[in-house]
Image (cartoon, helix red, strand yellow):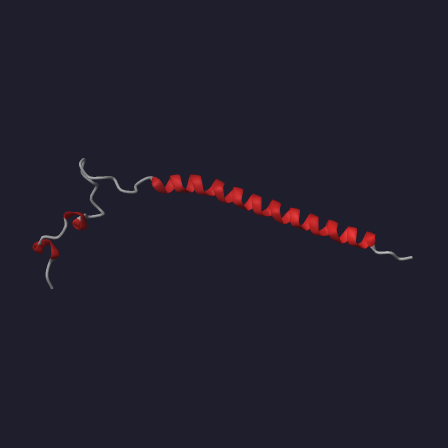
Length: 76
């Protein structure tokens, strides 16, 4: 097996994840997980609230249509 480090591999591929990045190296995605959670949870809550409101509106409209249909039938 050939060691890629000996063949001249890209230095970006040789990064050790256990070593902290140097001052000239980018930090990567460190710290973005909390930002995604803080942004994602309210958006999911809003989407759920809108879906529930839509479902409630559909039930109310369907109930109203059934009531009007029953009232329009002539028993006489």
